[in-house]
Amino acid sequence: MEPKIIKTARQHRLYLAEVERLIAGDPAADTRDGARLELLAKLVEDYEKKHFPFDKPDPVDAIIFRMEEQGLRQKDIAELLGGKSRASEILSRKRPLTLTMIRALHEKLAIPSELLIREPTAVYRVQRKAKRKKPRQP
Image (cartoon, rainbow, N blue to C red; front, side, top):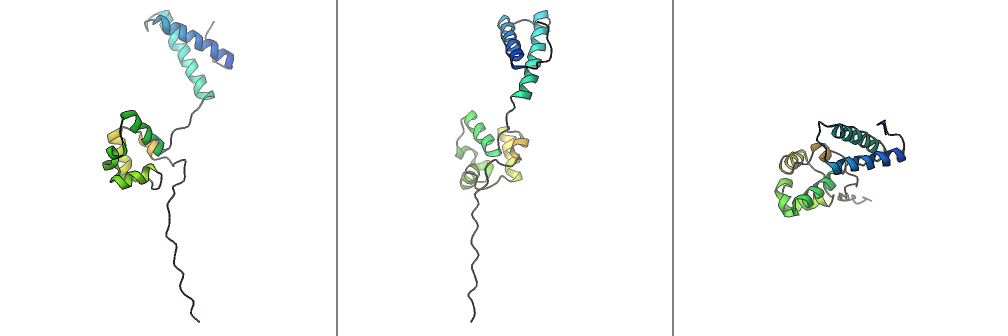
């Protein structure tokens, strides 16, 4: 098969099978099979980016993912977020991240800052105090 831009799901399956076959042979990059593997992998990647997009996680999901990945608990990141109660509020989406928190999470946990500055998918549940009504004067 002559490599071409993938336009159909059938082509995608065929190219993916060929990529898997070539990977199993572990060709050197400077060989014909190595060059073919590189080209087919790029074509498959381009097709998948276009047809199988995925959303970036919201800031809290990104933090939780990194915590799970590194085996961290809430108390382990509390210092980065300004204390235990503040960490709890952030992770339960009751409080938004501040710029200082974003910088700390980016530097210490290597979470991309572009994920941390995104608007969260869930709305923060901030409770506001009700205003007291002034009593009526007769």
